[in-house]
Length: 162
Image (cartoon, rainbow, N blue to C red; front, side, top):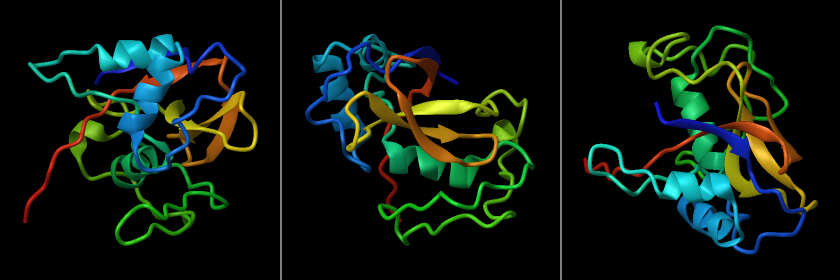
């Protein structure tokens, strides 16, 4: 997996254009324009000829947890909503979502998320020096100081046609 560990941004200023809950690519571009080293690194990635990587938004990273939960720990049940998903994702129960059935993403497998916090590209709206995070140990979502160092997983969009 393509993971980096850095601060979201070293500024306490509001980053215009980085508040979307569903458009991580736009958020990441806004972060980079505001000077985020993390965002610049992700946007500069070229993996297997693909250069469309970005930091997922709050709801995009929540979908990763909902579908690729690595471990078996009970879920934190006071968060985990996702109004951007279709159908809308409702708050977790202790056992839903369950550990992923995708073996490469189960705990300690090669593609698994670590049981840790990950930055999203969504800045906190109420406090300009905070940004949203997604926990992969129990699904908790919270915001934290942007100047703190944390993991980020680069993702890209793939069009699925049925």
